Amino acid sequence: MEAIERDNQLKQAADAALAEARLACAKWKPFNSVHEGYAVILEELDELWSEAKQRVPSKERLKLEARQVAAMAIRFVAELTLAAFFLFVVSSYSGAQTISTKMMTPGTPLAISLSPQLTTTLLLPEVPSGTFGLGLVNNQGGANGVVQIEHPEGSKIIVLHPLSETAAMTMTVLMDGQLYVFNLRSAANPDVAITLVKAEAAAPRAQEVTPEEVKAARIKYDPELLVGFERRARDASLLRKLYPDLYQGYDTRSVDYTSDSGVVKTTVKQIHRFSKEDATVVEGTVQNETDHPIQFDGRAATVLVANETHPVKLLDCLRPIPPGATVPIDVVLQGDVDGGRANLSIDNPMRIILPPIPGEGTVWDYKNGRNGGPFKIPHAADKHPVPLTQMDKPKEGQP
Figure (cartoon, rainbow, N blue to C red):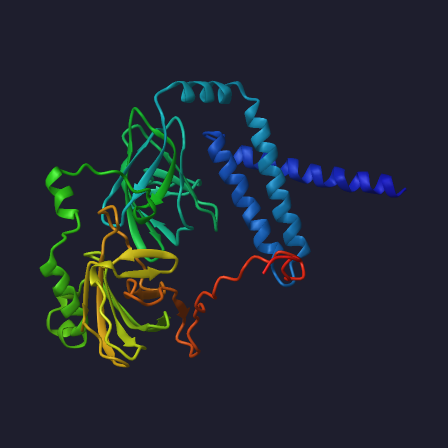
């Protein structure tokens, strides 16, 4: 009995959907293409979903919308079997048509080619807030209609169909608070499907450059420029407001990175970055931890950037450094070792590493601003004679 009752319910639902499909076929002309048929089914499905997601959906409303979905699906299947429909599909896809991706810009109208023999489907990057245009009509037609438009609610799809061979009009689409203009016109080579992307989302394209532009983009290495970077970094708080052009791409941050060899201790206090010139200025101090003056070759100093070692292009520090004294030290980095750009991030830890001090050790202990005794390697012990026995005692007869 339950199976019989279930079968009757299915028959009633099918009869209702079939009646709805017959009514739609009598009221509306056949679908112009499979694109339009899909769009209509999707529109009915969206209406069903709108009711289904209500807090308390109406059972009768759900039945009505579901019946509409089934009716449009039946109509779609039926029209696929018509000979005229198949002839249309064959003829439309055998002609010169376009399936492409186009870039849309708010200030530039975009041309879309249409044809009365088919529909053109646009896939937008976002759901549009509205479509406007004198001559746009829905699928019910209109006395002054030029182009028929279908837009399932909440979808990114717009389906267009011109009503004549001479159709021409302007359509405006509101999306993400911006207006995009489309010039719609019937043409011999219509667009079938277009995927639209925003200008800022488009893939970057290679651009041809001249040898002069290549030379102008290269990093300029000049001792006077290095001194200029040091001075600009030191006086940034004052000069940045007075000469903003000198500080384009400039950034700075305060840090506390210490490097201790037991002989000298360097501490980085401030890092300055001039990204346009690919230059980095490191400010800090160096302390002589010995009881005698020390001297070093500034040209051999390096900066440890994270786990990479970069040579110093300019070092400014008092030498010799008096015993126990702490003096300022500034170093300038620019470019990479191969002459290209290093593009160092200012967020990297940077430590100043001085070259070996004559007569002193070279082992460094790196600290992130934490106090603590320097890490040192003890002096080598006197060479111990190799034991002649496991008990470290000489054999009998040997001294």
